[in-house]
Image 1 (cartoon, rainbow, N blue to C red):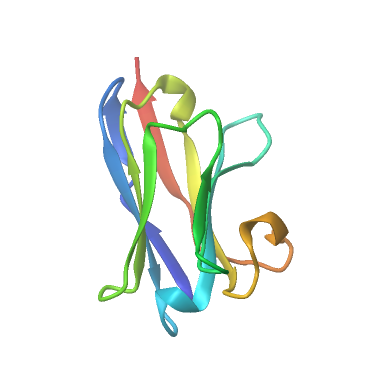
Image 2 (cartoon, rainbow, N blue to C red):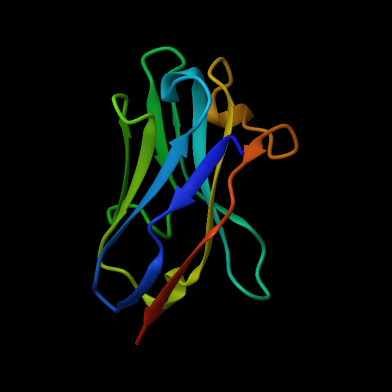
Length: 125
């Protein structure tokens, strides 16, 4: 196992959760890391991606912009996805994935990525 995702759970609409993606080999700065989610019957969606290429950048899906925040904790080798103002539409299994750090988020290949196990997020109405 190279990535370990955790932090999912059941929360009410408007609540918050923080997901963790721990990098078990090497350092969190060795990778461009993204979070994806997949709800039953829906396509997988990229939620957010963070890269250190160039000056570094983070992108977010329009559906979560302003509510979700990605951050790196280098001391803990962990990427966090802070989720606030959660909605029932956020209910899904959330996955983190990594590619080598020289890949920008725009070039993030899901086929080449290393994936962690998912963590379930359920938002009740």
